[in-house]
Length: 387
Image: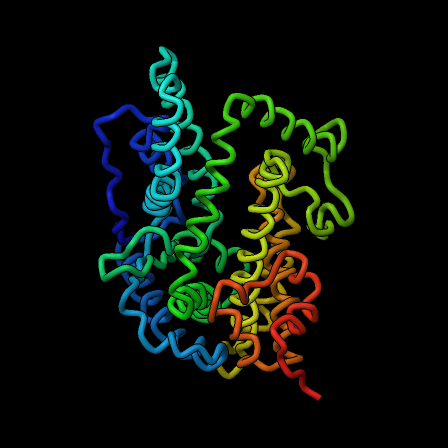
């Protein structure tokens, strides 16, 4: 696979997170992908690149976003698991270092501690371990935060080993499945091209949230422990027990079981997280609607793919379910569902052009409440409804 993720360079000053260790640990611990010959790998990489390019026209036709006509400011990368993990270390660094720099200035004692070096190494290793786990789960990702080599746009990464593993697991047509995945991921690329202000908007809110957490770093260990206890208590005395009903299907109501982040914030932090949750729900929901907007004329086996892919999550083992819940991944799956319902309702009531007002300004973004009450967003935008 291509390995185009930029290297993570060390800075001369001491760091609260050892980024080099995080990147190295993530790459080293990332599990190997499916067994393939060099020729098969080369063919899969080229096929994914071709299908990713072909998907842009379909995204334009369904989304009606003219930004899809020119994506030269961003770039497409076909990567392996280790490269994806290393690239995400750089994303974390880009997002968190301004906050860490601020902490170094306001709380220099954190850097003079004799245990700082050990803590930095442990934090780097922990981050690397988390990214290694995620590296085998992610099919694709658009990273708007680290500039591409083509300009100020971001990087779209398709994780080839994972796409191939899932298509084999589901026994679906490889080309159809790859195009279906590309439709979702390319939509994210188009979203940020259509709303060039969105990157800075999200970066600012993420920085504020991380700053709020760092300001309360003295109690972080205690709150992390409470988070783990609350999640395992919600699952019963045995955290690895088999889940049933709504918990197993990820259908808890909004705000429930959101992983570690759900118990880390004070009211101000929760408000910041609520806004970011709404934005992520919008982005994921819109990408899902575009992906599901194709019919058999574009992806001949799309119905089979949808059915088998949706059923796949139910087969996860208890340990993986626990890890996903601790990391907040189950909450992310609800973002797909909640966001999709919002987008479908707005499009049904106002048309795609009415929905696309959301990309015009920060004030047009839905709140977390409006994600679950799309008619209120429609009324706030004063959009004429169909019928």
